[in-house]
Amino acid sequence: MTKTETTAKLRNLHIAPRKVRLVANLIKRMPVNEALAQLLVVTSRSADPVVKLLRSAISNAKNSGMNVDKLVVKTIFVDQGPMMKRSLPRAQGRATPIMKKMSHITLVLAESTSTKPNRFDLAKADKKPKKEAKPERKAKAKAPETKPEGTRENTNKPGFFRRTFQRKAI
Image 1: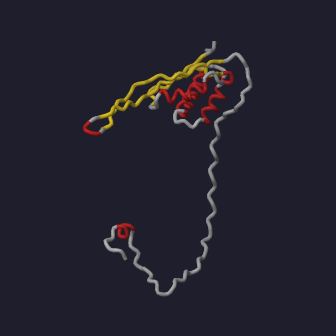
Image 2: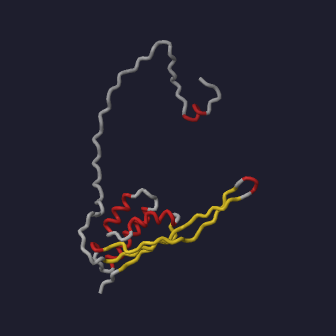
Image 3: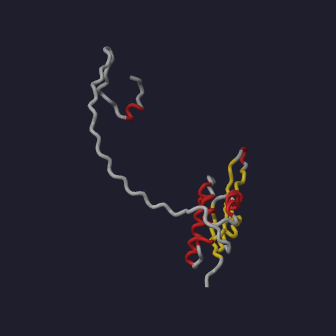
């Protein structure tokens, strides 16, 4: 007997729930391939942890014997986690409170009964083959530079610190 639902949870994500909900609401009731494609395009900072959570939920579904091609994001909700309380020093000895909020994300995947064809095929890319060593280049012979007469050539080249911390200009 196979289950029809599987869940994955991410707790104590150091991003405010309001920001994570913007990304989470994009993928509600989507097939997992489309949801994954949508999340990979989003530029929000909270998209990466949600992608990781979605892949974890898909892996959980595989382990419980569910058909991955029929999986749909049934629900995803973001709750407020604990708050770190900090303070910012202000004028005249005052302090302004800063609340660093955290999120708890819960993702539920379910098998759908409808069989729509997948619009996207998101197979993981194989590792790139190692590059071959480049052939060594032959050193080009440089023509000797001619300096105009009357210029003084500095044969004594000081190091970085001497040049930087000199008291007198040359």
